[in-house]
Structure formats: C-alpha cells, structure tokens
Image (cartoon, rainbow over all chains, first blue to last red; front, top):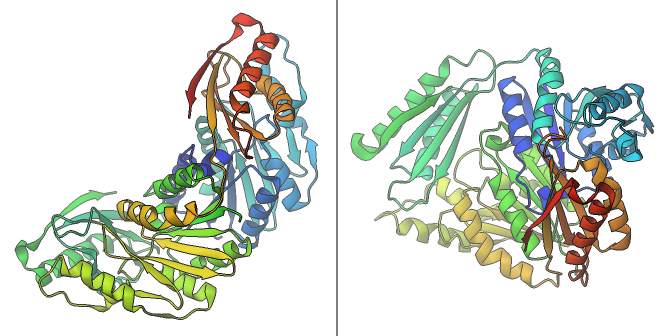
Length: 270
Length: 270
C-alpha cells in the first residue's frame, strides 16, 4: 500500500497573513513520524469554488489520504463540507450519528439545548461520509472515501484538530506499512553553501538511499556563515548509513578546506 | 487592473514538518497591506515534476502575480528555475546580468573567486527572464512574464527573500490600483460560536461590503469561551462602516444574551 498524503488548509485568515498555518506544520511532523510522505499543502480561501477545485485537483493526484483543515464550524463562511460535496457530487444531508454527537456536546453546556440550523449545519455531511467524534469541541471530524483516496476533514481550532487526528487518523495511518524515517542534523560553520554543494553531490552518489539537504542560515558574508545539513533516509534499510554519510561529508570538508577552516558539530540525532 | 496573487513555497523541509513556512505568512501580510488578494498558497517538495505541475496549474488560474519561494541556491536539489523552465517551455541559459551579480557577490568574499558550476547555476535562468539583485545574499531573484502572470522567484533564506521583496516586488505591486484594507478585531468572551452565527448572518446582510470572520479560541466549555471576531472591508468605500458594524454585532449580542452575559472588548483597530 502506498502512503502519500496531501493537506488542504482552509481559511481567509491564513491568506491575509492574520494566522500562521501551524496546523499543517503539526500534521506534517506527525505524518513524517508515521513514515508517510506529505506531497503537497494547499492553503485556500473560504470560497466554495476554490475548495471544490482544490479538492478535485488533489484527488486527480491520487494521494492515499487528503486531510482538510478548517471550515467545519457553524458560521456562514465554514464551507468545507459544501465544497467537498460539490467536488464529489455527493449531496449534503443531515447525518444521524453526527447530529447525536452535536446534541451530546450541547447537552453538556446547556440545560435545554436548541438544535438551531447553525448547530445542525455541523452535522450536515456529504452522503456516504462518517463523522469522527470531537473529544474537545463541537464540530465532528468527517471521513469520506473517494476513488482510492480517504478524505479526513478536521476543524481548524488547533486543540480540536489535534484531538481528532490522534483519536481517528493515527490509528488509520498506522495500518499502512511504512518505513519510519531516521535523520541527523549537522551544523557546519565557516563554509558557504556553494563550497558544500560538490561534496553533497559526491555523497548523493555514494549514498543513493539517503536525502541530503543544506539550509543556509545567516548571510553568506564569510563571517561565520552557518549551514544546517539535514540527512535522512528515503528508503528502508538505509538508516544505518546516516552517521557514516555525515562523517563522509565532514571528512571531505576538512580535506578541502584545511583542518582549521571550520568547526563541525553534530547537534542532533533523532 | 486586477491584483490577485498566488505563492508556491518549495522545499522538502516544509513538507516533512522540519521548517514552518513563515515566508509565505510574511508575504501574505505584505500583500494584504498593499491591497492585494492572495488566492492560494501551495507548498511543494523539491521535485522537478511537482514544481512544473504546480506552476502550470497556477498559471491556468491567471493570478496577476505568482511568487515562488525557495530552490534558487547552488545545490542539486535547488530546482525551482528548472521547474519553471519546463512549465513554460523556455530553455535555461546563463544570463549575463545574473552572472555579473553572482561574480560581484563572491568578489566581496574571496580574493580570487572561481565561478564553479555550482555558482554559475545561480545565474542560469529560463530564457526571457530578468534577474533581481539580492542585496544580502548570493542567488539573485528572478522575474519572468507568462501569459498575463508575472512570476517572481525569491530565495528561501528569509532575510534574502524579504530584501528582494522590498526592493523589487513592492514597487511593482504598488503600481497596481488597489484598495488598502482596514480591519478591526473584537474579542468576545462568554458566548459560543453557534450563538454568534445568526447575528453575523444579519450583519452580513446589512454590511455586504464587509467581511466577518469568527475564530473560536479555547474550548466551547461554557467557561470563558473566547471568540475573536475579525471584520474587514473587501470593497473600496466600506472602510467607514467597520466600527459601526462592530457596534451592531455587540448590541445584538447584548440584546440576545442579556447585558451581563458577556464582556466585549474592542482590542485592536488597525
């Protein structure tokens, strides 16, 4: 089974620069820990057309899982499920199980809760989907299956998103056979990226199952430039080579630049 | 002239959850200040196919500006310009002006700089594009025009991205006629989102040129739930109505819930 994912994160607050999308970042980390490959993250405005197109485009790329974040609440501009409904041509209808979840939630808050249309909206799902209990909020998550892709829709409130991710998505994702990644980060000071590039090219030939990425930090001014080198395995069975590959890069750097030209420090090994 | 934008942010480090995409967030804020509408942000892996498709898909949606971030450096996995070259069917070639910018940069760092192929790579642009000087780093930005969309490619190092954005993009974007947005944020405690929803529906009818968005913060537990209500103008000439609209919402809340049921505080007015 493949294990590729996409995220669609929905909300004008993201696109106007009001809110930083820490939700996608958090899920990206979780997916990596689970050995999944996140292929793409898309941030969209609260627009029915935009959500419909975004979901359709994603389904054409056939990820195993598509996670949507945000737009499940009671207000007019919460339109994720309407967008998915249009993308999939599956009509929206009130789901009994979801309505029970919403009722139960308000019963804990109010003596005689009224099921207004705003509240009922949170239980109105595309036909064929399943509600996912929200342990810490109102709007249930939603799971829908479409042509090989499982779509999970989560609320945008971080605590609710995380709670449903943990209770409903992690168990699902763990059922896929994946390779847990291993990684190492090396901080290299005193060398500029263009000098490191040919050494990394060599390293890539010697260790084809490893992924090498250099991140320059600070300006290339010659005065203590800093590069973070991130090495991780992209295929199973290559985990053992990471430390060896890091050692190779450092040895080549020392050989090229003279022993005193840089200080290398292995800073993290997760 | 329209003034819509998209961002494509490139780098495996984003998709594995290693790095939070603060670059897109920063640009989103700038675009909003300039009166532009950011329609979509896409995060892509360091993959030639992925970048090619991402750029082609964006061009089909005809934004006035497409900003790409990242992948301009000297290493093997910096492939943004190769991806744009394929998307546009414009061959890569060494640009004289860009090469001069790269040379000038290394001359400030080294006595006798060598133009290795890694350094020349940063001056290899899709045919027809223009390099944008990088005041604080090596890789120049790149400007390309394709069927009504201007593509700006910026490096992923935040200081370099910001410097080129300020020197090259802001002057370009200011040449468009836009409406500068005004906004107000209201913190509302003691009410849950589903109770606010019908009032916002009313407010939307009364103030059709304003945008109302509620962000629940904290759990809907009944004990001090907090909602941030964000109001801003989406059309010119509606700026004056924002304070009035906020007052309307607060009055309706007070009327529905009784005067003592919530404390409302206008917290910010930018």
